[in-house]
Image (cartoon, rainbow, N blue to C red; front, top):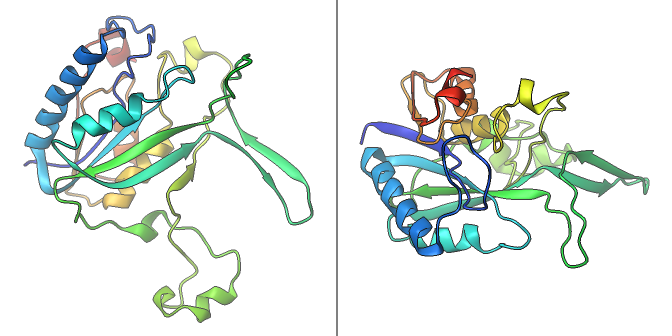
Length: 237
């Protein structure tokens, strides 16, 4: 009960080629291992702490995030589910289609390209307060500011559970992002700010990788960060 916020993205068991970790456990081994480390997260998490768990899938293995959540509901309550949108096409009021973000295209006669992942907000009771407006967005229709009493006259509303957070364009993965499975710093920042980025807060990531969650914690001005990483090369980075 010493950690306020946990933000992490564990291996998805999809055969990702890490330096030291073999990402090909059996189904039973993966769930058992996940329960073990998640139980340790629960032990160190404060009673009103937040555990933000980023999980993805593969088109050929779409159930992994849900199967893992069924296992982890033995330990936590699922309080919110966020959809991390990496790429999306929207149509403007003028009828123009605009595509934004980045995605990894696939060639398949069965599956469409996967452009999103999940961020599950897990808590001990389901009653952890969040600061919704800390990651709020301006109203598109400014008349809503006066129309709704809950705005308090402010031009900011709840962002909702669809988060468009694209990867930054890079020239070389080896030089600029030398890890096969990172999330953007901005994604972790959203999680930390939603819970409440107080100066005395403690943030933890049990799967640190090259440290994007640590950078996010520093950007949010929290007091302390704890990270774990088994790969010396990633840690040095």
